[in-house]
Length: 97
Image 1 (cartoon, helix red, strand yellow):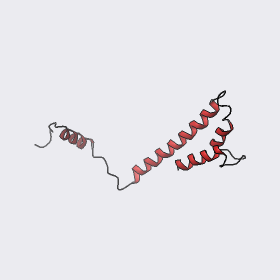
Image 2 (spheres, one colour; image 1 turned 90 degrees about the vertical axis):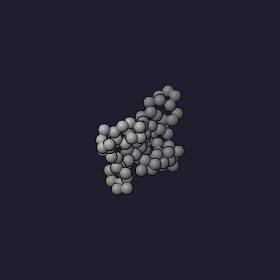
Image 3 (cartoon, one colour; image 1 turned 30 degrees about the horizontal axis):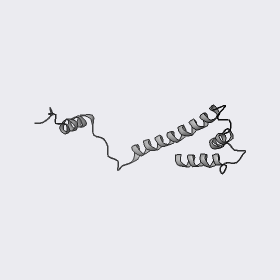
């Protein structure tokens, strides 16, 4: 989904995307491209929102995959991790001997 948004933004920046009555972040950046040297904030805000939207979509997708993927390996409990780390690095475990 984030790739589709970035593709639409790039196409709108180049003039092949959304037409004039509708608004696109790529179109806004393209309109203010000539004013970048004198008023750079006209470029920063649309670019910032493009990055934020893409990151949010990726984080939501990763969270949904982590929550609902049955094939993903679950992490063991913290005590098991502690025992595995001690065994890995040569420490003695206080558990069963």
